[in-house]
Image 1 (cartoon, rainbow, N blue to C red):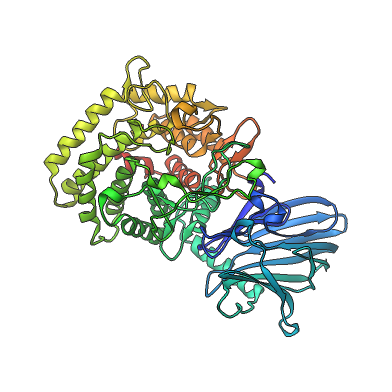
Image 2 (tube, one colour):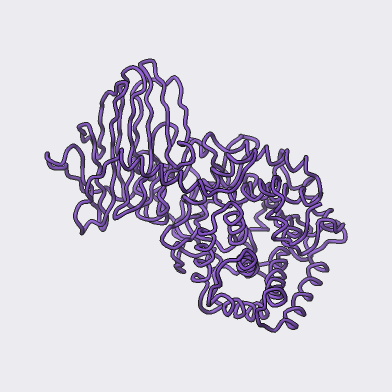
Length: 601
């Protein structure tokens, strides 16, 4: 199954991936970062999956989300007739729940169900018992602290640690299968009415979508993207996970496989602008508040990512019993990059809080004191080398983007004093800001190339340099910036899409090779807008939108040669970038202008 052959369902606590073949191959309960009970995505069916599909040959498969919802409808056509499989996760109440409703559309179709539950990422076979006769068809599965209850409208048969069912569905019939999760030391989760849950879930999503303020030709792409971003939000805290998956490869068969089920500070400003500008002010405030809580404490201990509730310890482990997606090993959980030094996050935090103030967010009582403490620490370390935006696992360098974002940190603090009446040592901050700017222009710019470069005194290009004008560090009209954008267009693209940088082991400590990075291509479109090249920006944006799969989802990367999506899926950073670029193309008030605080050409 290709990565783009999956669709997402979720309840703003956790999420599942459903394949075009009707198989749920990934589900982590009770949180995005919990152990998977279906992990076939990173192995085989023996690692856990739940498939419901016609038993015979398929004539066609079509999928869609019910309009403005996260309710997935998969239509199977066979020689016998047609059925629709409706998949969704109800709004979280006491327990985690998932429902699958088989709807007969035409004829009489033979169906099959295969249920293989494996806790702890496919490692643990649970103890299973059948439900009592009065409770209906189904099973209760327990392993350690967890229990899962499957309730079925048809009898189940046990075969080799697998439960299967064979049944038929006729036109007009509706058969509901439900799955519930709970703690094993508590009572078995009660049954729920799938049909009532379906209507309540669909209504809830549609009401939420009514708040979307984006209009125009890109509205379908934007609405699907904001629904996806909402689905990737951990409702109890407001934290936004980068993706609901781990270890989907950036190159098939490669080792660039990372766990993205955490919240990155680097997403802060762009995510905040996307949510606020799309009409989701409450979600933006919740994200801002999560950000302040997560980084609270000693500035020296600020991390580049945190857990869903702000957890700091997310150690990286290898799951050697999983072969990986299409044999792309290793499979990792946790992320060692959490302990890296990435100086750009200081600028991201300062800019996000600055944008929140500009947009009239209610004042957070601790935010400004925390920002002052962060700047005091940044004054002592901005000259240090770091691992940079891309979290390289090679030697630390003086990454140009990192230094630009240090400049952003002090620049936004100065604006808070000058325009918003905050108190602080503004003269000292101006002095540091000017020092950083001068150093970047001297050491981050190659006179031989005539462009800015990835790191001081190097000759490598890097897509992060596209953020120089969008942050306001220098305008697109500056000859050095224009030359950098044009060089990236010439040298850092494949089939017109942008790669992060030319991967080499000497640069990032890993074997080379990955796809084009979708967010970077949206950044190029933003730069083209700033340069007044609107037709080219529009053409690039349209091509990027056409990379979405049949239900409107984007992964982290794309391989132009094979025409496949790569990396963790769906990726919040890609959808945030899509929303912002769509508004940059179609709105009078553009996110790129809000951040750069300069008008586009």
